[in-house]
Length: 254
Image (cartoon, rainbow, N blue to C red):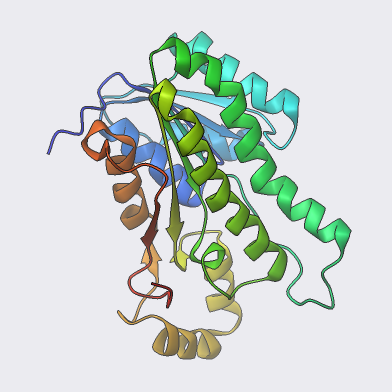
């Protein structure tokens, strides 16, 4: 299936590793021109250097948890490729593991690493998307934004991202800007939290997989990236405001 992404311009935040890198790489392979964005210059350079595909890549070092960083990465996309068609908000992070550890400072920190950059980058991109006659905005959330599990502040932040995507989808439809969220389940990749847990306590993780993951394994970055590449394409033009789950049956919500 041709996704029609050739020469589309995409911005993927948090794309030096993990799910963000996988999404950006898949878009390059589909012919899109992609801005890779992260705070770490070395990891970002390595991600871009490893690419092969018809699309072009531009690495921009920026901290999108700040208003200046959000504006800078959008401006960089316009400077590099002349516009912007697709925004994938992938920056995130977890916090306190229990309610006893959760305080206002922790919640502020986790919202500031998940919800705030998604809103800031999306808002910075709106004038450019409107100038192009429309576009697509994706928010990478989590199954823990849809049901209980994970750390409490992370749940709150991811639930807020899903809610934000729904509100944006309604408001921006008039501008032909399509918005949705994606909720991955437990996904294993180099340098990620699940890899660290498997290394530190393999027996507990084997029990977790047997108990929680019906297919008997973690998800992969490629499995998430393939779904996102389809969703940001015109082939998914009627997916608006939805939260699309990619979790191998892990979650229990309807």
